[in-house]
Image (cartoon, rainbow, N blue to C red):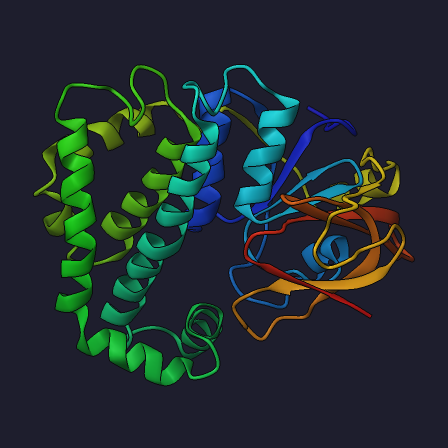
Length: 314
């Protein structure tokens, strides 16, 4: 099967918990998509050619539109493929706020437990890369501290999981009721990560019987209709496409952005990464989109969420 310009192309690797979150989203919506396997560690030259420097996993591509961060990806999937909805109840804004907890504080605990528990066994290049991404400049001491405080970190995760387990004890099949939602994927990727990547994960999770039953139901949703694609084919599709991003800048934007202003975008947490530079195409309270040119691609539009990202003028 040959991918078309309008098809979903997902740049990911199988072990990534954040990519698993989106793959579950594909399963909820039963979408067809094309998987491009990317390296676990940099350099990632084919990916960064598309993004302009962003190297985190995952990245979604549709034609010449490149979506960075799972928050941005799930939002775009909901816009393009509204049924079945990621928000089957009437409070999507509240669920967005809840997802900042699952993807933020809870996932950070999971990362510290997984990396900290294996700190003495991690390959040096992997420890340096992931430590720098998640623990900042002083990542070496961060790993040591996580290793020395695993029991404390587990206690911090156990409390919230008890509350979620109690909520699921009323017989509901999914977090919000009878239909799976984005929040199911956003919680599931944490459970999948902790159980699968922490040596004590299965034992730790066995206490939460209703979460375990729920996780099996999420797993059974599958990942939609997956096909494979090479990085070279993805690049060619971007080259043969044009972005469909609208031109808009919120006149009330607190940073005073204007159409065509040159900017750079980077994650709020300093992971030692290269900022992405380009010209503002779209800016509102949720999204910042910039256009950039590459000799091998032509012009592409790279999209980021506003939340969790720093945007600076050049």
